[in-house]
Image 1 (cartoon, protein in one colour):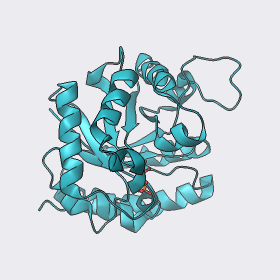
Image 2 (cartoon, helix red, strand yellow):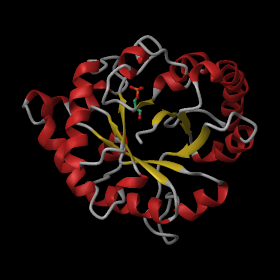
Image 3 (tube, protein in one colour):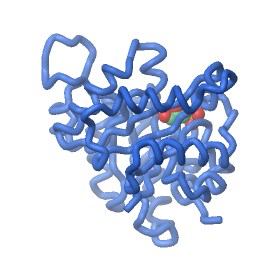
Length: 249
Ligand code: 13P
């Protein structure tokens, strides 16, 4: 069964104080609309490491479908890897989801399909569900290479990865933080291709890239799209509440 997963990626935004203020505002909106929304969707907030204990504490009193996630995980259980974070450190806190291979990690921090693959396997080994991000650049799209680029990201990134404990986010790089959302039908088409390549009927595949409260309903109406990964619009409690409480068209 494909699950609906609505996730926020806070990136490098929010101190502990700001994170707490967000949830104080956000949680009642979640509760108020939870019955209309139904219990089917999983909501995840992937937040900076320093905010995780605070958020986990507050989310413990929230409706059960809110989880807190991280934005990166190293492949080693521990070691001399300055600035990295190990899976046991996240698991001890109670983290169940982690983003792996976001395009910003690939672009600015030298993440490759090979390191993505190692991080995915480490997350799964420790019982977390990774959210693997894939997506093409503007140049790839202009050159007609969207499908082949994504196919190779999947092929290389997913070697020996368990598809039954995985979420994929299709995030075209040109749509991230630009306001230039991928047309819903086109996102649906690419996600359909990903699904047929991986040949797994139960895999949850999200769309990400300038998702906002005013385009969420159309995106979620697409048959191949099982949820969204939201950057900027997840920072505002009202806006994100409208996104998680999307209306079925
Ligand atoms: P925006 O929603 O800000 O475009 O970011 C998308 C994203 O990168 C989520 O991981």
